[in-house]
Structures are given as C-alpha cells and as structure tokens.
Length: 222
Image 1: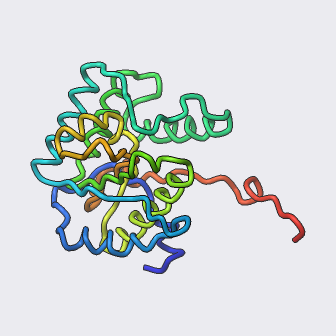
Image 2: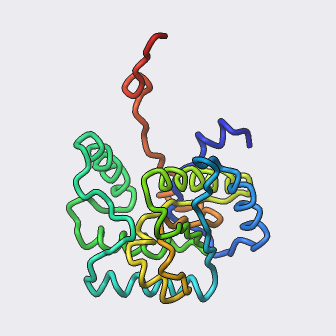
C-alpha cells in the first residue's frame, strides 16, 4: 500500500474478528514504527503488547471499575472542556456514528454499553499500550508518542490489520498495572486496539469527516 493511500485509508476500526495477530507480525509493526520521529531522538516510548488471557483480565478489570462507578484517573488527564470548535466536531462524529449502532445521543443506557465496548477494545484480540517514563510526560514527549502511535496505525494496514487508538484503555491505569505489572515509574499514555477487521459490521463502514483545506490553512508569503 502506498503511503498516501494508507494515510487516507486508515480509520478507526470498532469491531474485530477473534483471530489473534501473530506475535511476529506485531513485532514487525513495532520494528518499523520505532523509526517514527522524536525530538532530539529521545524516543520517549515503550510498548506493552497484550493478548490471550492477560488481555481478557485487563478488559475485565477496566469494565469492573467502570461499572462500579469509579472515577477515571488517567495518568494524563483529558481536557474536559475543549474549545467550542473541537467540541462541535466531536458532537458531529457521535451524531453520525450512533445511528449506525441503532441508538441516539440521548439514549444514555446504550451509550453506556458502547463505552463498555470501548473499554473492552471493541473485542480486538490484541492491544498495544504505549507508555513513557513518569518524568517524561511533558507536551513534547506526548507529541512524539502521537507520532509513533500514528505510525503503528499506518504500518498495521500493510498486514491487513485495523486499529483503534483509544484513551478508554488507559482510563484506569492502576487497574492495568495490577494485571500486567507495569511499574509506577512508567505512565500509560494511550492504548491501541489491533486485529483483523470484521467488515460485516456496519460500524466498520463508517468514516469520519475532515475539515476542508481552506478552513485549516493560512498561507503566509505564498
């Protein structure tokens, strides 16, 4: 797959076949992705790759805390009130997505069920957790981790795989640490669901929109 084609083809996959991804394929993906750029070549990332019973235990632990009403405490809190323009785009996304799933934004119970699916990585057979040193969580380090995360998502396409980059998978970092033994000296940044897409699911036909070029670019001196 050519690079431009891959960038345009990548999208969030929200339903997977049960077939696990072979360890050697996951290793190849990370081996390529580690060449992503980072400021001063700091490479502020490490990867925990989950599957099998370990992943099921992580999913169960996240679900348990969510259903118990435990307040999320991610290592890197999300801005609760983004600028209005960003909020509008998020509302537009869910307003288009939820009808495909058979419910509306006003249906709180179904939205809650959908969030549980997110917590369970949309039934993906594997998950990649990206972590960084606890003292490296500055905005520049997180920018670098964004670069390697995007690279993973693009490289995965070469192997016929789909991904979904998920903040939900790191909402309860202590629960994840308890299961897989991530030391407290490392912070969880993001989770990536990865597997073979189930293309029979209508939700996997969904593609989010993008703003037009003229709305995003200011030309200076050109």
